[in-house]
Image (tube, rainbow over all chains, first blue to last red; front, side, top):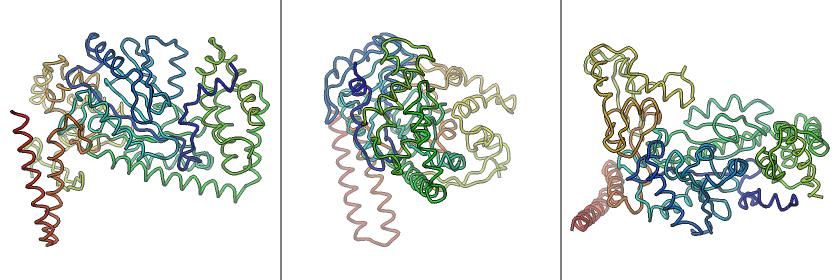
Length: 354
Length: 182
């Protein structure tokens, strides 16, 4: 397989499009948790019940289409190799938790990979919709329509006063987790982000690294999402998140401007050094790669580098993850072998731009 | 003043809670404030797991012996559908099925209050198909709030229009209920 072909498989089609404010916001996501009213939740349910749900989704939705989300593929987790599971996790199409479960867990993914439904995870149904750039409202609107479409055939567990009932008390009510992925290199460089995170937490929002709970903000990419799901409407939750994101975008832009005003040569040096490492290194660890990719992306945004497409950060951040590297090599690799392949893949990818 | 929760100990904490724009005065003792989730303690940080496990273990802390025995009794609560017991729910931190929400209903408000910043009631989406009359009910509530505001503003003409709309919706709800039962 050529690198070009591999990348076409690796990058979700929706990721190629530019969205609003996509210099800073990489993607927006809405996730809704739902359960069947009559069936116990997956942590405690009988296997026969989970199997029924599994089969229901396979029969009703395989190759089904809804609006732009066409030709859903039904993927039983049991049928996947460890590397394939890892790839889906790295693409954010399934959660690490779903990948660990095997029996009766499944995923339903639209052709454009914008919608994925996780089946028999912590809840029976967890649907997620992705949009490029900063488009939370659009994502919410579409998520509601998709939810209504599923509800045509599913009796949801819903209570007038508690809302959508979920296995974990932290999801009850709206069952919604809205999140955005943001690239904040200037706020990180100036260490302003450390002061902002506690303030953001106080507003009932959570800041995490790119691969969710407990992960570091590798590549200066932060995920910001709502914590509270009960007592506020979905649109109010999205509005609150949106206003915080809006402010972060503002601060990030100002911080970039200040860095440029005060030390533009230093910035240029910093960026080109990273560019050099990506272009010429022969062994590179994922942390270093992420750091350099973040710098190069910043260099593109600031106008220092103009011969590479902006998408490079989103693309290579995913492509250079261990699962993808091993899928590319078609075998499992030691960490040293991965570092070598990672360096060569990055060099090739940069060459493609010429 | 006695504590509004236990009605035994004197209320030592007094504060105003604003939930969805409604102000309520809260007068509680320290034990109830902690137990019923009125207060979050800064040392617990933001980790949800800490919050949850801390919360579920509250029963054993600083309780009088009388209450302790009443709690052990309550611990025997068991969901008729999935057989999850209250103590198991506390240990795992997850519900077993939709019915658990009814079974443990009396014990949930403090948990939700802590996890969801003082909120215990849903204010969002209602299922399109299954929601039935709930959509109309929600709209009536919105109109009623609107009506109060209009009356306060002495906009009586507008208020009359809203009042008629409420009547229409209520009639519609009755029709629907009658239809459902037939």
